[in-house]
Image (cartoon, rainbow, N blue to C red; front, side):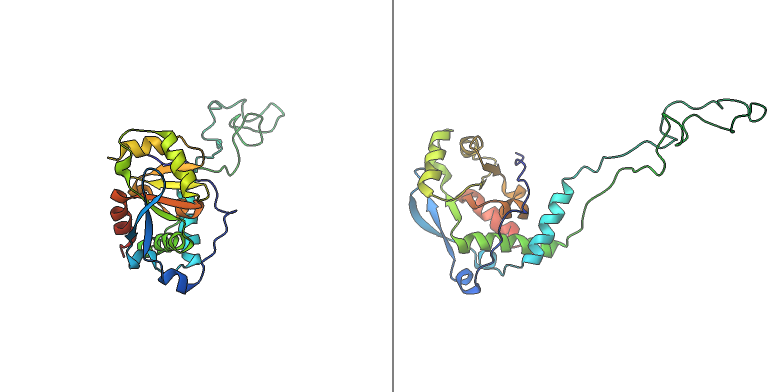
Amino acid sequence: MAARDVGSTESREFDVGSTESRQNVLSAPLLGSDGKKANDISLEEAVFSAEVKPYLVHEAVRAEQNARRQGTRAAKSRGLVSGGRAKPWRQKGTGRARAGTTRAPHWTGGGVAFSTGGRNFEVKVNRKARHAALRGALSLHASNGTFGVLDGSGFDAPSTKRATDLLAAWGKESPLVVVATDEEESVIKSFRNIDSVVVCAPSELNVAAAVWARSLLVTRDALEAVQGRAAQS
């Protein structure tokens, strides 16, 4: 269950807010299938009241976006261009400049001098820094009130209309990231065709997606996996 391209995060504002507002947020609204708040569900303080460090978030987002680059741009050198195996003319006696191949860089149809090959754009980020950045992104959503928990049991069958009405009743901005387990197939099928909504598994939730999203909706079954992944040190 792959998430769609979350795009660039350059245009997204990243307001870390105040420390006091983050420390007071320890719960999130539990939404029913109608989008109305049914109850409050407690959140782990270590995950959703963590300190937001913008430099770690930037480092993690940059590494995740670089990892998606294929780095397959390349040009053919004189050794990779087909042909040119035979010497075009003899070494002496023709009056022309000596040549050993027709695929030299200064020949038409020849290879490229100092050609570029495959490039690896991956940037290493320490595991602790990665998890700290994810905790910071989740804490930012919790402090801004853009984090919600969905009771997936209300979706007994796929219904895009019900999912659209739920988002309208919740009233949060899009784009939206919905995190659901693989077993919640009805929830996945209900949200995946809505514009500006990305559905992913708990293992696929990364910092770039959390920063890109204006709001974050996690199912109750997926909440424990998200908290466990972010709480790792």
